[in-house]
Amino acid sequence: MTLFPDKPAHPAPCNTAAKSFILQFDGGSRGNPGPAGIGVTVSTDTGKSVYELGEFLGHYTNNVAEYTALLRGLAAAVALGATKLLVRADSELVVRQLNGIYKVKSPDLKPLFAQAVQLIGKIGDVKIHHVYREGNSRADALANLAMDTESMVEPLGPLPRN
Image (cartoon, rainbow, N blue to C red; front, top):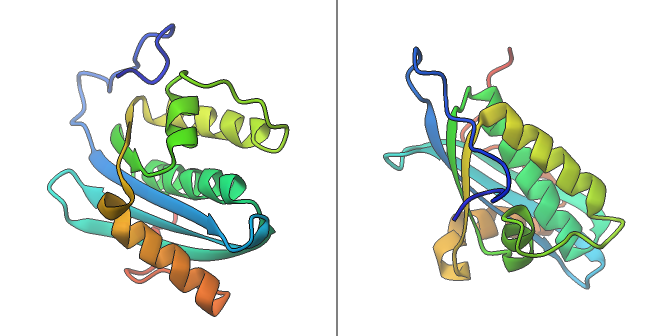
């Protein structure tokens, strides 16, 4: 499945080794709209966790929370120097919109979608796949922790500053 069927992929330059990561994210809202939080995990392609985030957002819809989680995860991947990224998420809407299957109609989601496309362009080789909720349990747990505590947590420490 390609990210944008009508656009060519942008592979990493041949003279550098690819920095490959896996991003999983989840966003939730209790009440929709209601108190919202996100969870993000970034791991190496061998499964070693390198960054985790749980963040309370305030009062938002579930879809805004899902996109915000994606944006935080993509920004983390960029900060980590990713040149190849596999994104796994349980939000069928976000996955299908990014893969060009669904159009983005919501005025609230259009700017978030545009930001995601911009960040994806900074990475280059990005594949986005849907997983079922049980395959996204750590990101879900971080989102729930953030909503429960109304706080931000980075269990593995903050991202490196450039």
